[in-house]
Image (tube, rainbow over the protein chains, first blue to last red):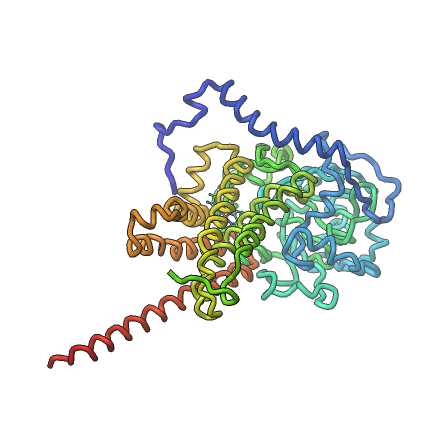
Length: 317
Length: 216
Ligand code: HEM
């Protein structure tokens, strides 16, 4: 660890702030202007090719920040079941069969049951929620998800007093996902994730069935996935098939693969670095620059900080 | 020096061809930049593109000597400096991408990264070790240093290649297939040198013993 001495001088300390900021801005502006010019010359856009979702209401939880283009969100994916490169899932998941589909909700609940996709779509009114999405790798996007609070589904099965955590599991099938092998991807399968019950019951935790007005594209986790906007993206498990309420903290895939780097909580936190890179800044895709400041709990601190009061967030990363 | 014999040599235009081949990735990157076809994450794309070409050309540079012997084309030596300098060129682009697009020349942050993140430390070491090699790559410097000393200095490339592999191995999240592949290539190329140098020494020893009978 490098201990920062008070005597350390930063360029910002010796150069007048305005000059310093101007130089920084200028350095970013030249290539950015160039890229914008190119974009104006040849705008691109591809459709999602999903099914339109109707009767979707707007949610007050939405950010007013500019949404990322669907082209980016559907062609830049971490979905290791379909390959470890970001551009592989959009190609390899095209024929992923998402119907029929059921999600089993079980464990410490009064009414365990399986939900068909039809039932999930009708369980609660669909809302559009425009959330910031921050990946642990240091990039971020703004996505108009469609879905409703996960609590609606959990309440339907009535968690018992024993339930303290929620364990999630993704679909896994080597026939459809020939690359979903530990020796290729370096992580275990099926992908598993977990939340504390109070986190899972928080209204911001979203069970998502769509984005940009349509059903989810396969590479973004069709037909139903989790979105936890104050946590790093990998907590938002895709293509959900099982939800189990349990009494002890469940294992999570990335934590099993590398406990040093990926904790159970994985709340977005600019002050807790990943061992290999700083988390203070992010790239708002498709920007060339990593110059967007990362916010505590990804900007959702006023809603969720209470869940972690008294907790050491450096230790419980 | 070995004079290339017609038919057995590598021809006059091959050097131009190798130059163009080494430049082609850069041309492709520049074209994709112009076409704004750098994927949704241009920073990652450029970083990975330049990093990959640095390590490929580094391995290619290391492969020249063994290939000369194994293929029986000693003339390949004509390309070694150029390929090595191209490795350095892509390494500089890679570093510049990091300095500019990732860190916006925030030298405080950069120094923190180099000092405390092992994968950055390793990459930085690999690149810094290439600097003296690039600077002394001219005929003039070979003369000034003398062949033996120049050769010893340029063995730094072995350390650089190992540091580059370590850099790659430490930076991947979980899929280690490519860093392991490059690691194996570098290991084979370095083992080749170890084995040939041991064999050479053994030969020299037996030759020396043959010339002067061993004392007992
Ligand atoms: C000879 C020197 C170097 C070589 C051969 C090299 C090679 C590589 C390679 C092969 C990759 C991964 C590409 C991929 O995953 O497709 C990479 C990534 C990277 N390198 Fe280097 N590199 C070198 C020096 C440096 C230096 C000096 C820095 C910065 C100080 C640096 C920073 C990075 C960063 C930030 C990444 C991306 C990491 C990520 O994606 O998480 N490298 N490099």
